[in-house]
Length: 603
Image (cartoon, rainbow, N blue to C red; front, top):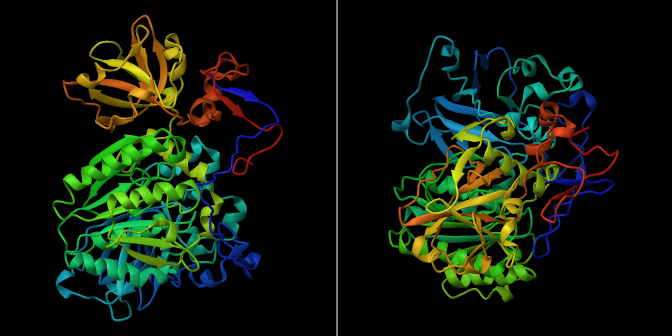
């Protein structure tokens, strides 16, 4: 049970294994109060200030407001930045997004744009292939199909439920656009066209604010073009991206992912996601290999489930906690790719922690030696110093400027991990989330014993009291895994009922399937049941020759799930499940909180 200690803080610094590169120096912008909009920036990178708002100005002619959509008429060289969640359809001509040209025959594009990420610039552009045009005109848009306009786009509401994440975590309230979150002062500063966006899941950025356009990454254009050209020429690519903290590694990979999958190539693209702390396509605190055939716009956040995915639960946000096991599991994912994707000449992009200093250097060296990538992209401002990496023959180093996004600093790494974790547990299916507290619903009941859940492994812990398995997993997050009975029969299982398994048996084994993560509600020792919350989209089916085990790492239960304002109101302060103000056992979790101090985002 969680135990609270007064006058302390649980805000720990998120340090990586190596040193970080300092962000671009910031300068003040000259913006008056009358010019301000939703969030007034005080600091922005000087060279990026020209990209912090659209050059599109709405008027009664170029904007049409529908019940759940807005149509924009864009003239030559006009662009629009749109925050929030929406579906985009091209009704006339072509548009360019992140260097990719989409024509009016394109399928509707779904966008999820949290404020922690740079927004994509949607710009009217020249048609490159008239055979790709499927222009759609109507009575209300007829005046936009004249020579005065170049492109016409229809932006529709996309209700995913992500905008409701503040219901559980107030500090994430403003991460996703929600008009209802605006204060009265914010609304007073809106003009008549901005006020018209009440009720929509999106909002165009028409005035300078803290939103940063993807256009600031133009210095990567040549590199992205070169990689895309190699892919079009049927070259096998294995690209690893490294660099300092917040240097743009994930953003670079998203852009390259979009460029490659927007070509005419038919082969899928594989993603090796090796950063458990800031994963892109994996479950929280996991690493994975997945296959992709379509583009994901904006932040992934487990919005869709990649096909042909193999996952390993690391159980920690950093590889440094169990480096040997991490290295073993990385090698297994590489071997899986080499046995399938590489043979089929399918390219690979690798998302890594990217560290090149300290102990992280050793992990990066092992990865490069094992994978033998075709290219290593190093994001850094300055001359690259990679002598210690010992790049193997045949691997090309591609230096590129790092891009340090000032908007990301509004949310710490811990807050973004919280968003990922809450998003995972509250996902119903692709692009659908419900942030009602888990405690308000009934958990799944799973038997333990023979042919069910055989035992519990606690990563990094051996010799635990075999009679404490109930206390160890209750109100904790575990990975639900299956392992072959022949392997399990060779392990030592301790105790009776829900047995404990020393982690030493797990470390050398890679033939384990991770089905998903679960939040253990309780263990019923009389009925031999584990009551557990598992996202309904997860597939728990296993082979008849395998049995389930639960793996406990250090993935922390969000306090919002156990003691949010809504939960406290329902159960009452003295009857909160799992939460106590006294430490009852050595397995209880301490949540340290400050007394008489309100956190940012909760004020």
